[in-house]
Length: 234
Ligand code: BTN
Image (cartoon, rainbow, N blue to C red; front, side):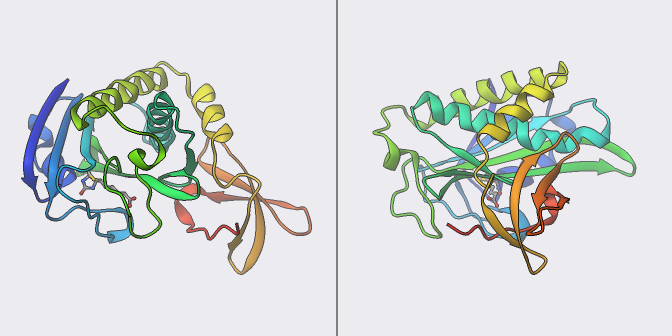
């Protein structure tokens, strides 16, 4: 594992973005503590020192930009599989969260870096709650689900292996299987959601990154995965 570890840093994603030219694909930047950890939509990602996985993976896939969105599912599957190796059944809450028991155990922040029109690479930032109990904002940690005997280094290594296994399967054209897995582990599937002032039922995610939703009159509609924020009824 090509790893650069920091005891403290502003944000591992920011570091990876800043040094992207010098970082080969496969590098992982991780930290014990972040002073400016970021989540999606400009949210702050807070994590106590040495409690959780805070890591950014450097990828430089030479795939067409039109399918790059699929990487979100590739990473989600990789995280779900790691959790399953601890006998924890997790679900993917689109677009970028991993849930256990209706609570968030991990978040993913994928950032694509361009130089003019040329894509330089992708930074996949993952915050995985491991030991930090009593989480705020509806969070849960792995140690709350099962007694965790592995240390953070080992969990990071398992995550690394899972990510690159799935990533190479994706590069080898196996997205159909990955998508099928993600649909089987989808948190929102068959749930009712509120979108655009309407109550819709969530169906499957398709290859193009759209989620099928069913209107009350049973007509269907497709919503781009990154374009909605959902409030699922429990
Ligand atoms: C989210 O749920 O909104 C995504 C959270 C992503 C957090 C991780 S922690 C490691 C990496 N560095 C950051 O600043 N953010 C990501």
